[in-house]
Amino acid sequence: MNPSSSSSSSSSSSCVGFAEFYETWFSELQRVVQELRGSRRVEAMEKVMRHHHKYYAEKSLAAEKDPLAVFLSPWATALERSLHWISGWRPTTAFHLVYTESSLLFESHIIDILQGHRTGDLGDLSPAQLRRFSDLQCLTVKEENALTEELSEWQDSVSEIMGPGAAFSEKIGRLVRIIKRADNLRLRTLRSVVGLLSPQQAIEFLIASAELLLGIRGWGLNHDRPYRK
Image 1 (tube, rainbow, N blue to C red):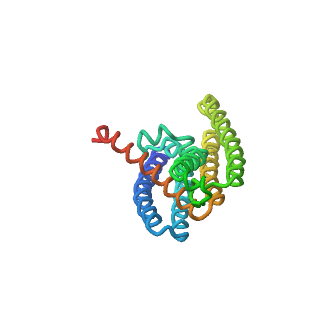
Image 2 (image 1 turned 180 degrees about the vertical axis):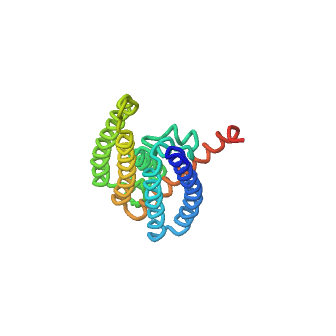
Image 3 (image 1 turned 90 degrees about the vertical axis):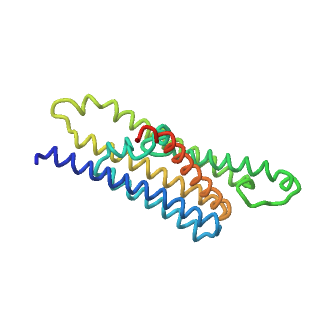
């Protein structure tokens, strides 16, 4: 077997392996979130966080083996890929989710809040929390923009990749680093958002986040089903 054939076989194997992990991860996400929804306990919340950490650890290994496959994410649905930013969700989506959930809960409890009753949920974010969220969002946007620019520069270097004597492995290595930095930002943002919330609010956020991921995947699978027969 020639080297290129061996490399292709290895990439295909790693791609299949992560695709299987991806399916299992979503099934397990549904289970741990059901546990969190039922118990509303910090221990269950920590289990959800560990589940997210496991995803990025496995994805990092897959990116080292085949960054192009990870970037394209063939295991994801068409809908999921249409929402991707560097092979995953955009970190600032977490802030939009917090604000959306907060607005919905605030409206549903507005009478209680106006009467001075504290609900303690996401609709009851304090002014200090909102300021910290705003500061964190600004920092996250800056990191997103820097990574977007770095990816654009990488894509602009395609002529160098295909040129004579091109250092292909070096260019692919740069893509691996971009993917890992994007995933690191996603995980750090998730942890930071949870850290700014009370336990009750963090639990509500993690449930809403999981429902969003599972809902998008479910819609995507229904859309893709006719094309996968």
